[in-house]
Amino acid sequence: MIFTKEFPEVYTPAIPVRPQAPSVFTIAVAPVTSSTFLFKKQTLFKIAVALPSSSLDRAKIWDREYHTAQRRGEESRPLSDYLLQKVNIVTPYEISNPLKVAITIRFLQTMSTDDFLQIIRDGFQGAPWRYTAYLEDALNKAISDEKIRSGEELAFYWFDNGELMVVKNGDVRGRIYKEGVNRRFLEVFVDNEHAICTELVKGLEDHIPRM
Image (cartoon, rainbow, N blue to C red; front, top):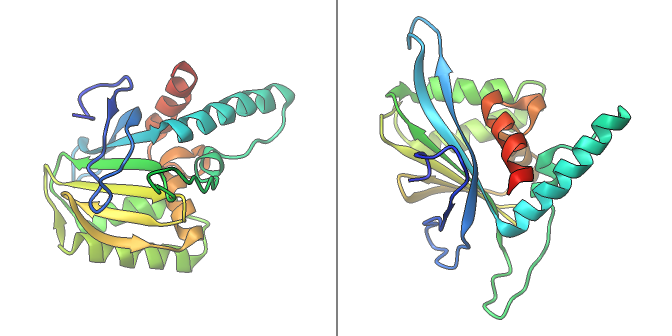
């Protein structure tokens, strides 16, 4: 459902072992394509970025400060800094570790796991080698197959305590608690400097102020 519209829509993510998950807003959806001889300009997969209302509020603050910095010719903090800002919310329902960001990837072509990981590696250029190695190992274990098939989905959920949950086709396949790794992984989806899909970042920049 979240891949059928370009404009934001609201849904409740089916996060395993977390039935109290809040509703989130789909902010941007974009395809990742390849023009190599191997894929012949096919769309490999689509990425959807969704935020709960608390993260959307921080994204709007980022948008205002980003444009203010641009007008002044100054550098600004990346969106990922705002989205991962700790809030430590405590509610009557004891939801003390709220969801920060939900990213879902739906594969439209069958591709090798290594080809997918190479795309992620491209976004990790310049990062400490141990970050790349750690994430690659975690994703390999989560995918647990030499191929990712058309129609399959990977979902990634960032939480307030620093946890990154990796879900494949609705099943939890891993949890990562390495703050630097998790932050850099988010950057490959939402920050211009490391983005693997500039169209996705453009969608975020266009839609956040209109929400």
